[in-house]
Image (cartoon, rainbow, N blue to C red; front, top):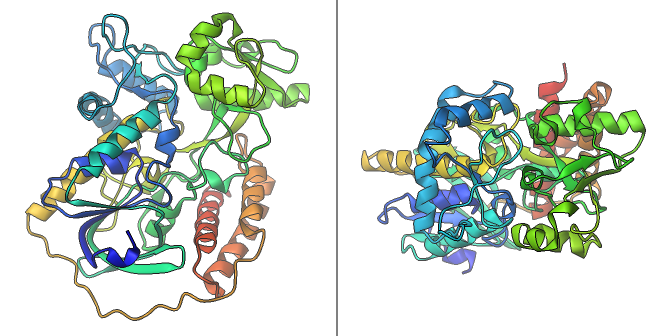
Length: 489
């Protein structure tokens, strides 16, 4: 489909095709017309890379909502919104079961019972999974369901360059290659994912440049706790910018974390050892690296054996093997890197932002469920619950007969200008990696903020061509500025 084939007006525009957007779409009635925009191919998102699984309480005899709530609060440093946490954990199981109706296959035992695994920070086995490619399984099956909907238009390789509020709705400017289009929406759901590419090393795909957060910020929406960035302690320690994640579930299934001397060391920092929450383990790795003067760390799960590892972690087994590491015979080199964002666009229990008719769900939203640190495998659950809540609330508003957007007379926008200065995004990443990585550097934060502010002002006030590179650089500079502004005391 060419952009020219898109309609001028939609009831709802959804920015992003990860789990929050997909499940949101599936919770709209079929008489509401929806445009779903994917920055790249519709299967490419942080959701599709999620390995460990989805946490939910299905066995009330051996587990409870209260236990899951407490684990979430402990991991989040009790900076969580208790109402949001309660909603997530009490309503989430029904959404997880609903995904099975859409064809999602979670691992089962020989009796057909769902298998549950354990991950860091959880006191019970409550994580459902599909091998170690849980996110991909969920995204793939929900995409198939969405593609069958007659009321949904899917537009791949389509980037939102800017968005503005107009009477009763929004003006959304999009581009694909050298083609541009303006569409209008009564409601917008931002489900645009994370900010990983603001860092030099991340587990996030190339699309994770914080575009949705930038768009909301530019329109005046409240952005909350953007400095609550999670660094995963066990990313594959390789040379690539996009690091291969070694799932939390590997430690949950018994892997040991070793220092450069091939010794376990977590007992020096936390009594929960390898099963401490992610922020604790990441800080422990950094402190141990400073103590020993080495960045060489390893996971050891060799004792589980080749057959078990190939069956339980086929994606990780293959991914490590492609890097020359056989996890049944070799230690896995690991080191922390940026993984997830707990803050974002501030939303309420219905995924409403502080701006009328604008909603956000998934990683770009700050629901309050995660506090300062996300409990493993709560993210996919959050995407389902708040994607659904957004759809339900928007539907209520449409059914109430609220006015549709007033489409103004269009003026042809001038998108020409100078090319983006080479190295802009690289400089932003280098600043963030030095200033705000696991254990922040206060001196580098202050200097970095001043430099980022200069970059942002140049991007905003200079006459640059509206390209994907420019828009992503603008998003990254905006994200970096907000983070460093929050933490620059």
